[in-house]
Amino acid sequence: MGRISLVVSDLVLSFMWIWAGVLVNILVHGVLGFSRKDTTGDIVRYLFSVISMFVFAFLQKLTKGGLYNPLTALASGVSGGFGSFIFSVVVRIPVEVIGSILAVKHIIHVFPEIGKGPKLNVAIHHGALTEGILTFFIVMLSLGLTRKIPGSFFMKTWIGSIAKLTLHVLGADLTGGCMNPAAVMGWAYARGEHITKEHLLVYWLGPVKATLLAVWFFNVVFKPLTEEQQEKPKAKSE
Image 1 (cartoon, rainbow, N blue to C red):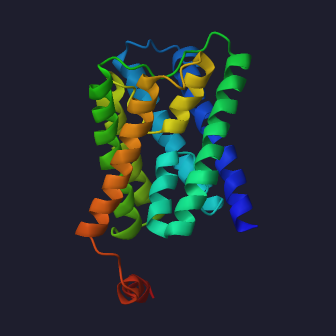
Image 2 (image 1 turned 60 degrees about the vertical axis):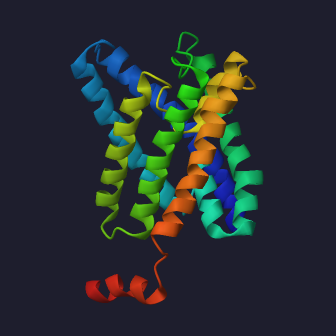
Image 3 (image 1 turned 90 degrees about the vertical axis):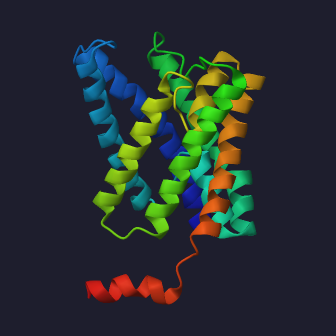
């Protein structure tokens, strides 16, 4: 039952994540009327994006591990052992992709004039390297926040949100700064470009290889906490 609830949570959160990004853009540029070329509009959009990430962090906690990003599921699967890895690759990641595709289809039905998702503006190998580097750093940070850095839910979410936003901004003009293959897959599927070399290399192969490298590097450099080390923070709080 636990795994079934996780799969359902992945489907729902993936669907909601795509919608959240669209609704933030509609709110900032449509309802509030900020121009897409206005710096103030960018700041307001980034603010709402951070709020959105806080909401999804709370939902992940509420669902006890629901995810919307295949790279997070992959990192979790690799760290959790062979059984967890197979479950993530065979079940969770495909479900997250399906959730994203369903969300894009629904968005296009409701808002036919909506955009077409992230666009690659550089050469394929340059794009794959960009998404790979961005993914490597965000996975390393996520592992660090989860396993090494003590602190409250708010502080960890704040650090993670600002880091994701910063990396997104750095890669936005090159690849869209996505770091989420499922989200890109949804839009690419709607355009019929989900099986192109460009899509597979830049938004899947690059980030997946970077995720595996980040997990391996983190485990080599930072040894997992022992039971005694995990109990120390609890003893201090008591």
